[in-house]
Length: 128
Image 1 (cartoon, rainbow, N blue to C red):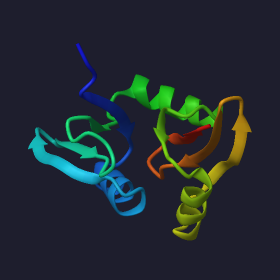
Image 2 (cartoon, rainbow, N blue to C red):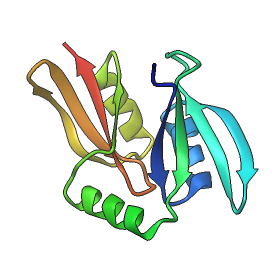
Image 3 (tube, rainbow, N blue to C red):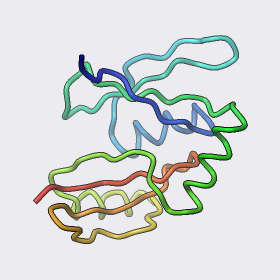
Image 4 (cartoon, rainbow, N blue to C red):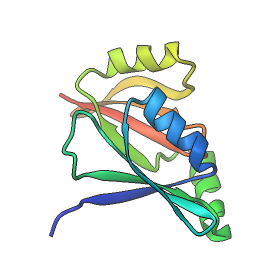
């Protein structure tokens, strides 16, 4: 058993696809209609092609409440590893990405937290 697909709920799939590809640098792998929504996945150009992140429409009222409350509490809903967090932080800031936490050392990792513009906080981390 292995993880091949994980999801994150987003308020707007098209906006999320743009942010995750054009800003974060992921690559769209799949996009096709599923009813009134789409099945959209992205992959990292630096990671295994088989590990996909699904940009799920946040249409469920319970999920919307969960997403909103986690954002208000400052809790990231996903974490992405980088080999140079300071460089990524500066690159993303120059693109207008809003960070709620600048890079800081937390035990064996350095972390920073950003808003994905679609209702989620995302943690970036660099292992020591």
